[in-house]
Image (cartoon, rainbow, N blue to C red; front, side, top):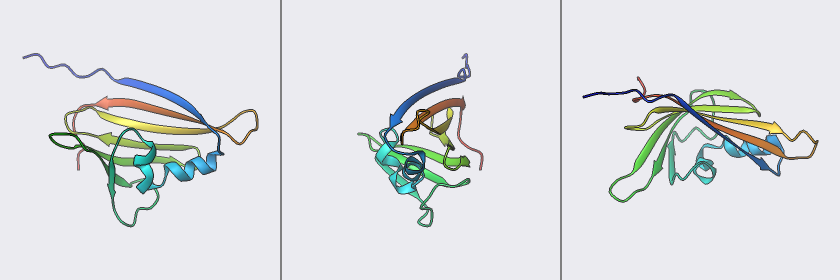
Length: 129
């Protein structure tokens, strides 16, 4: 049997949001609201005292599927308010992924934000505890 390691891969996308970076930051760092804007997850589980993401916060994302749920364990690794949020995402049978959000004020001085979302696949397996 020949096993190959997945080649590291990075995908990035950006959207413009008609709100200042501080307001977007409030949205993306509210733990209970992650499923409202991130991918197609149905639920988020987190410690009751974790209202806002901070370095070290762990949470589980759940997607309901016929035949069983998909889950991903996430841990915040970097936070630079109100400009940068990063977490590492572990899912069974998938490569570990780094997820990064960068918020940039619109250069023309309007109250808008450019939100850059980058995913980098780091390797295989689950986190060490």
